[in-house]
Length: 338
Image 1 (tube, helix red, strand yellow):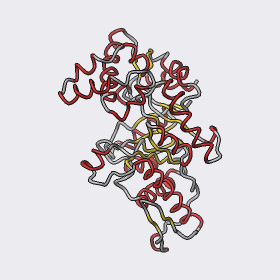
Image 2 (tube, rainbow, N blue to C red; image 1 turned 135 degrees about the vertical axis):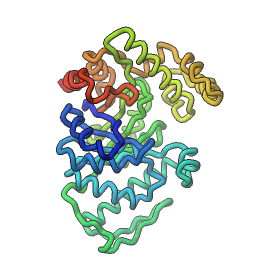
Image 3 (cartoon, rainbow, N blue to C red; image 1 turned 90 degrees about the vertical axis):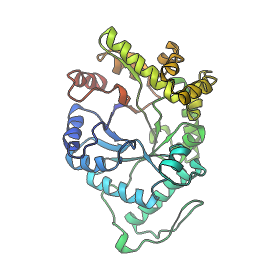
């Protein structure tokens, strides 16, 4: 299992130093997400400041961008990084697509699958000179003149990961993609009984094996070296679980343990703005199910033990991550990678 790091620095002027520190510490991949900033720009800077660490989006929202735009972004990042880029895409939910990005939200699973297919067709045209002739339900691409063709690159096989919670998208990941971004709100039971079987169906449909696929996520951790640190961290995780569990999208994660009836209660409190009341509904059993607890010396082994065979790469969920200058971080990374 590889240990990754999320991009916590979004100032492009400081990104080179940040990326070099992450690489020197021994993290395997630096992921940039689409929240308050564009996910691609920091990786473009990091690509020219590093030499070995992988770089990826976890995730970029797919539908506000044409697959042609995504194809150019990924192609240039793959070339700049010398083949270290991973394109991670997600659907986001209906409200954000329609009200934040002002784009149509329709059949998100089939549409994301088609985005992946279109990207492969466009890249094949650029790399091998094949005629661009992609005709789908949502997208059509049949024009590519030499003036707009960037031409071949040394590492044309760009891994595509998609994010998925429900069975359909997990199956699409197995059938059409190189990996799945598992949501950090997960459990070993949910992964083993819900996610992996769906991905396996997709892998079998595409005649591939488990070895051809990567499960990536970040792990909610209750971490600390003192009782006070552990309690503070535990409360933060309890609040984070309550936030995710209040959304119907993540009901399968709760249903894996018979807790799906909690969703409407949490949702009601979220509408009322009762954040403390939401956290109070999350039991210790739920925290221990969805988060891993340990000190900075033991957390790596405990994460590996819980997710062995279920995840191929993970990182500490953002709210749990140390600053890169914390003296305990190098020890944690070394212990994880041992």
